[in-house]
Length: 605
Ligand code: AGP
Image (cartoon, rainbow, N blue to C red; front, side, top):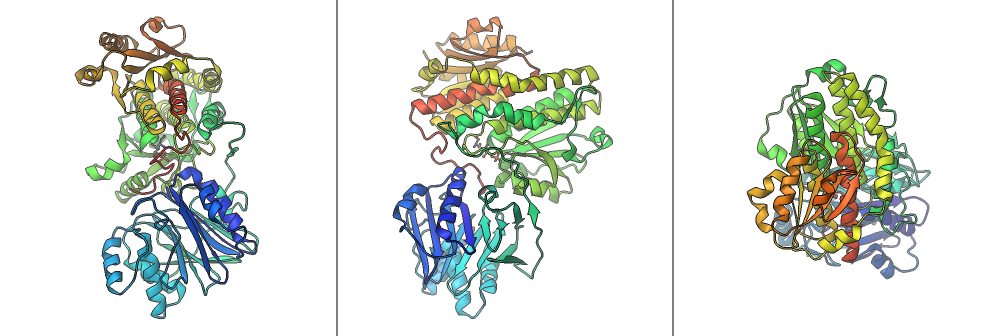
């Protein structure tokens, strides 16, 4: 997803902007560019990686104000001309933008009829020409931006530089922007990540805000009128966000799971009472007891964690629970019960589909709690209350440690609400003990030698791979399929194991790889039947099972996990799937951390 960096201060802007773009790389992009103000606005931009941009930059560009951008193509192909920044015709105004302008085609036609010549296919370019026309009609920079925004329909996070103004004007509507307050210098970014090394004091722009940023401060305004802003301090929750000695962020983040789980559960379990304590939910025991049902909403990996969460809540608390695809939620005209509990599950806290669902629920007088990794993110702030999963920065596009911590957080909630109802203390204590074992158990899985290369050989040339699981393992099958698809580009199908015989079994032929997740739980025996159905058609079984279980005799390539509680097993069984996907992608020479076509945070619907 696009990334924005801005700087105004007393230092040379170029190196600060480039370093900021590098810190935003994990968002995914296909081109980048920079604009620095000196005698005129100097613009350099190109397709490819940031190092490709650096290769076309002069050694030095003097100037203490600038904006920069990484583009993830939406309107218009991946070309140098479509890269941001974009300039007005007189080259006196430059803009970078994240979001989608839904009425850009109509505006473009009007502007072309006025003689405007476009240099790109992008929706963004219409904004800079609207601003330029307003300036020519005599409006000041702030009002010219205001008048342009009043015409737009869609989403934006944008920064505008004017040749005759020593300020940067920013605006937000649906695409996040955060402003960092330094000493006689200011920073602008799409997310707080690149700001941490400069300042902990930030202002999060809200939808409809416009900010005028100069090197000694900012003023905030609205499209109509003005507003105030709140300076908050971002507690640097993040651990180490550098690659360190790892070859890829994905492998680093897989290995960080034991510590991440510790961070997530630390201080949140009470062994003596056999319960959990999630203060951030801001819910009394009485409120918890009265919840009629729970709805969990997410996308991709977060959705699969939500599917585990809903099973855990029903299993432990006996409260009806439902997991929904965020992009389908409000479109299906759901019945929203204000007494129900809603969770928005999201690593980045910026996923547009999930944020839109949150707003829909709130518009229907119900509350939403976040289960979020990025502190201070849009969804976290929109929800107001919730649970931070404390995974630390997750920079690989393929989510790993966020999944395990989302499942952990939802288990904590399921335990807390279960104990507020009829879950016996002994059952609660058993779950707490099992949770406290997880860090060492995940450590043992990650560090144990296992037949990954045998699995890679079975998978790497397959036409497709079938992932099967029952009960708590069905969402794990979907997560494992997603990992393999998104970083190895292998077509995968994830199905409840019992459903496979109702169709997908037709895919099987001699040597077809079938990945089966079958921990030692109540689903085990029936899953063995499904394994046999697959083997009878020549399938090669890659089996994830509990250590010591003689189910191993049914597998061709076996991976073992330690025993744990049923609702926690996804946190263990997912790890071999993460590593199988990782090693397969390596074998196929894929770009593991930056897979094609994907962004880390999808901030467009
Ligand atoms: C998972 O590996 C993918 N990167 C993707 O499916 C991701 O989980 C999804 O876009 C949701 O992101 P979020 O958790 O930041 O909301």
